Length: 239
Image (cartoon, rainbow, N blue to C red; front, top):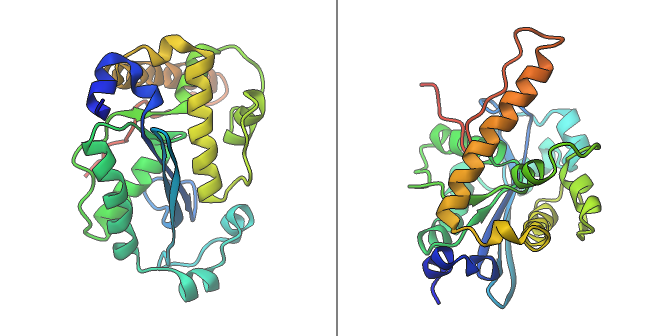
């Protein structure tokens, strides 16, 4: 059975998935630069295949970012690839499985995919033709358990769902953990896995919009000007 046939039948959850994780210089989507990334092809009865990149972002890596992912400016400059080269390889690693119908798993997709999109534009690297279908464990978890208390970071969700996570803020380990989390969610909530991939992608768009609206309403209780972007899985460029 091909990946596209799996997506139509709902049996796609047993097939190949490709996973993306990035580490960056900051949280601002428009200015953050990628300093490390990983893709993992996993599932379909094959052993996981991980590829990782260390990237020279061309700017100083802030100390607060280094404290999270442990990558220094000197390390990135000495050992990292040029951004355009690395970005081209990352896009190629994602494009082939997506074209074959495999889902792209990204935890908090709007951050990682938007930063990747802006970096590609910055360095004149063609972006993905289509960003679909995407599985975002953060959106799925919030949908199935909207009122559960506690943090919803990747480590916190891995702990909640009893998913192995061998090293937060290491892009390969984060990608593997996101894949395991997606797999666990599809088993704990089998109704999700029974939905064809294209429909699940569309469902997540609606769920993400509702979740953003709810968070914005909550934030406006203390900050009337608070705005939470509702675009998913990618925030469009404004220019």
